[in-house]
Structure formats: structure tokens, C-alpha cells
Amino acid sequence: MIRLTCLLRRKEGLTPAEFQDYWENHHGPLVANSKCGRYALRYEQHPRSLDDYRGDDDRSGYDGVTVQWFESMDAYRAHMKEDDFPAMFEDIGRFLDTDRLEFVLTEEPRVIVDGPTG
Image 1 (cartoon, rainbow, N blue to C red):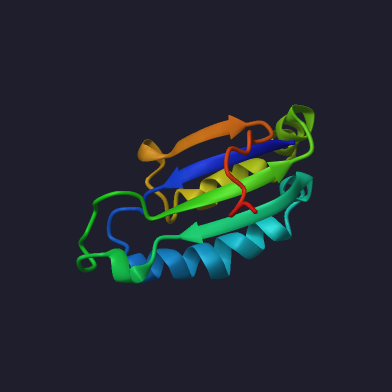
Image 2: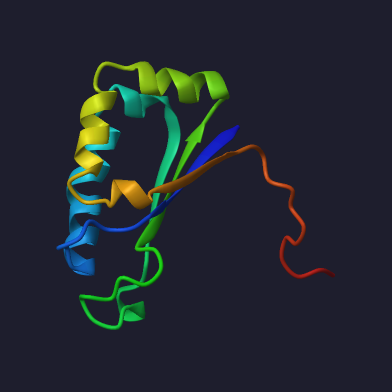
């Protein structure tokens, strides 16, 4: 299993609420209904709590995290080769600061703590 985790910052000029609305109601369905999205076993959006901002102009920290799960590195690479992938990447430029996009590909987690014991 491969997980693509992206740390997101919203595009300049968007409020946190506008960012979250676009991400959930436009980009999410776009991913879900795309050819490149079919390679993802799971697509998660983890928005920053709106209560965590100090106003709409707060640019500190990240605005959210997205996690996409893929069966393998081959599946991850295949999703980027689909003909609709460029349009998907173009869409992220509408709501994300692509110059500050951070991501990492990880394998299965090493579980250190898994709830209370005994």
C-alpha cells in the first residue's frame, strides 16, 4: 500500500471557508469521477478546523491535508499517466498555493501505539 499525503495551503485571496468549500464541493467530486482518480483506493480530505484560524487573513500553518491510498507504486504512477491528470493538476491551481505544496509517499505504517492496553 502506498499513501500520498499532501500538506495544503490555500491560494492567496481565498478565505478558509471558501477554500474548504471548493475543495469539498468541486475538487473532491472531480477526483472521484475522474479516470486518474479510479486508481485511488481511498481519497481523504482533512480540513483545518475553521475555529483554529485567527480570521480570514490568517496564513499561518497549513489549511488541510489530503491522503490518497494506492495499491502500489505502479498504481500511483499509472494515475499520473491518465489523460485527465493534467486537468486535475490544473484544478488544484484554482484553490491551492502550488508553490508551497508539500507531499510525501509512504508505505505501510509502523504502528507504535494502538490504543490503551490491558
